[in-house]
Length: 259
Picture 1 (tube, rainbow, N blue to C red):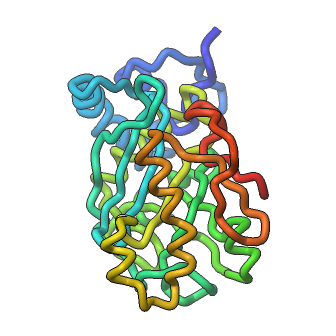
Picture 2: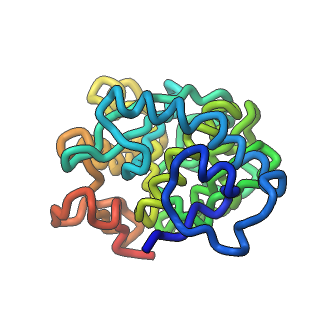
């Protein structure tokens, strides 16, 4: 018995990309009803399959995302042989604000911290081609009174607090993430850092008013580098802490112990 097909694909696209799944009646609509998401599969699926195969991955592998604001990089990591491994990096075309967390609605800041994207947060009708809502504010953000909404990774090349990676690369990211969801992943973790959390970079920013916040993020970055998957995170007290557990990458990734 097949799983339900990805929500946004037409029968023609399913046949083209070779997904073996059951198409619900509600999804059996003309492709024109969902053109950006459908075009993403038409434009990118075959290309991604070939590229993934060359690097030892498969379309549908679990996805983990890391963002580094200073260097404007969005890294895509895919699960292989029990750990997440780097597949490719997308250049962030537009990113507003400065280094540091988002604190209030309208400050034009892109957030920093740990976020999760579920299938319900995917937007195939975005005015920026395609988009994922990061789920800002998370539990830690709310605990310090941060406000805001609709913080996205999206297409295009304009930002008022979001991460814009152009339509072309957003299509690739969309296909990778939706294929992972279709294959059983329940949520994709997105870790957003101000910069690569090296001792030199932390020392370079030692006088920043955000230095204590960044000191909380550094162990999360280091843990992923060392283990190849995200730690479980304890957010009690509004502080990111690596929980004392080691469940591996098939556990709920970056499972926050506070909602």
